[in-house]
Length: 355
Image (tube, rainbow, N blue to C red; front, side, top):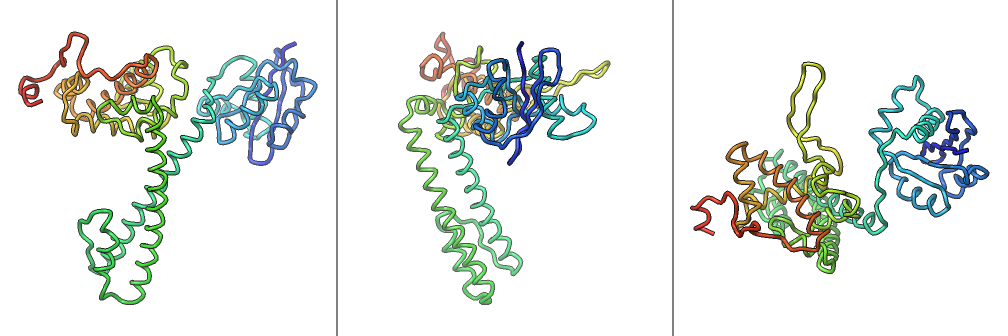
């Protein structure tokens, strides 16, 4: 008889529930959140387990990989879908959640999450650490500016490399306490900038030695960060049957709500990886505004901007970029600046002449 197990994972303990295909509870217990301990708790049932479900969370990639290695048919389930399914329970406990997950495995009502490879996980950590240092670095600069404004001291517009020298210059005649505070903040800023630069250089080196990322950067507007973020998020291009679904995967498709007589659409779904969606939007904006060379993709975006507005056009180009990058990855082709017939599409004559 086939059995189904649900794991409600927490930091220290994991609640486990095993049910049969009729929904009868076979076993309920807890185990330490370690693959070996979970495998031991399932001992005696492992050969009959058809699915072992766990929610997508921080431990999921590690547990999925280790449980699979130990011979268990582990499945990671989308967190939002699972939360909605379990919210119907009267009482929220780890034990009840494990039972609910087991029943989801039994009836097949779940959305399986793709667990990325170890390489992609490491690349995502690099991207997130770099992004965090950049944000904190900017926060420090803004804090220094705000602190000095309270005393009527203005740093003004200054480049990033000359910021520290300018800050030291304007506090020359300030009180010793204010000088000490600013010196401390500048020391932290200096350290953050050094570590951020180190991670950014590491990212650039990885992109330089990766043929797929190098091919991505031939697309106008796509830089090293966008290329690496897209590659790490997709991980395996063959998991998408059609390139068109990649844009929807990153939440760049229109959102619709329909219920009874109410039916409207507006905005985008914003599902999936928000950071990849942001990098694709920034790449599309660069392609539309800063790119000097004309292309069929830009001409298509300009045509949408005339009909629907600039913001909608940038989102549409971001979605199209996701499709183009995925197809380039699968086919091993280069970016096509023109259409198959050699034209640029809706390119205005004045712009064509300028190009």
